[in-house]
Length: 306
Image 1 (cartoon, rainbow, N blue to C red):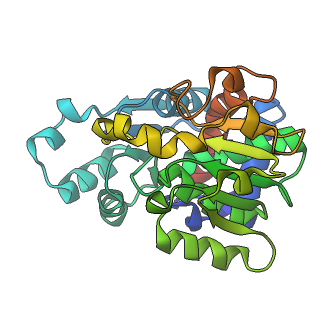
Image 2: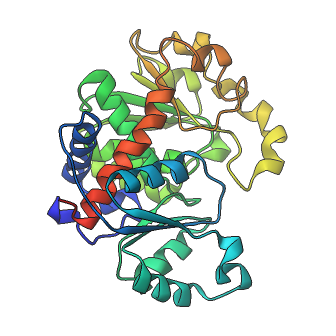
């Protein structure tokens, strides 16, 4: 995919619907062993937030492409001593071929992209989680053989995952419903952007009624009720979000062939019951695996692997 070579991925709207589909097709081909790509480059991981799936999947993906990974632990670099972001960005640009950043503010990510010529990837910010949604869309495509016309309902906190799901689903022609308490809705600008992308083709629905959101949906999706950095709010949020828990009664309102997704880590019997995450309709572990394949496709495309 030459069209992506050298570009940044700061949010899903940096991609067109066609480019998302091309990435998913490449990811599926890589997963099936139909394509073999080599990319002996160096990926830097600059993570200010804890990570399991993102860190490991990016690392394994780069190794499998024949490249190397440098884990830029912020506690062991000058970043922890207050080195200006613009200085760090310009130095890393001289050493690395590509950089994935997992941080709090979108502004820091954008600063890196402005001062480094190498591709910069959003590996999670408080605003968006685009790499997660690429894996999610791959999982939906595997389950249903298509994306067009599929309805995905996200239940819970209108967080970074909800924001990126809005954009990702709109880009590929999926209906997207966000069921959240009225005070916990997704970012308003992203909602409007998703509606503009979707046009009249697909549904973009925000509702405070979980049953309305779930009725007839093909995919039920949830995330923790308190994101990283909000742990002190977790207990107080439980009664607010309890009606949005994915459980068997709620799942029965969805399409009979519906699948269940969770980006992990899961707080079992809070946002999702143990029965559902371990049930026959769960695709959570396929979803987690697909982080590897989606990100390998992304790295290969941004670096121009052959």
